[in-house]
Image (cartoon, rainbow, N blue to C red; front, side, top):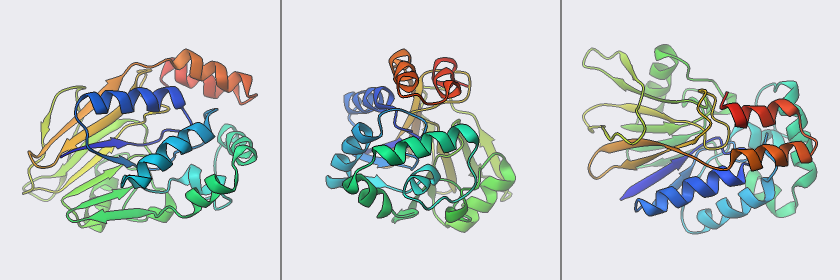
Length: 247
């Protein structure tokens, strides 16, 4: 089984369609969308239509803080650009999309795997896992072999070493990483829709849990078109530039 993992899509249709096509070409047969489906980008309806179709076929989908804000349940304060994008997104959503987002869970547990948008230590608070201390709290609270999450917009992997301390690992695109079940792992899969590590390629990961392998990927997509849609919608210029620069 190959599990494709996408986070922080942020209404970026060009990015998610490129990532899905890439994953399908590699034989992905299961999918998980780790929150922040909307916000920032200019295609919330098209993106939600795609994800709803995958959800109907059994994909895991969890709630992100931008998704919660879009249905009037903000988890934490947003900056001015994010607030402007959420206000615009709210005006685009119909009853079906609002109902879909409202019904999303904060976490999904499947055997020894936990799916969450941010930290498993407090899923409702959208805590950023930016270092070993936050990673350890999330791993211990999640109580799973594998925790898959997003929110940080940069790919990163942590595992508990033999001494019980979290060890960080920065993945290389396309290089499989052994993730043996004898350890506990936390994978931040990066952002499909708004990467922030100065690489303007979309990011996602595939977990082959039967072989205990995790591979992160960077996928080129038409970020120029996605940025121009943001400008055409009257959304903040900063959001368009982030796609072009990857930061």
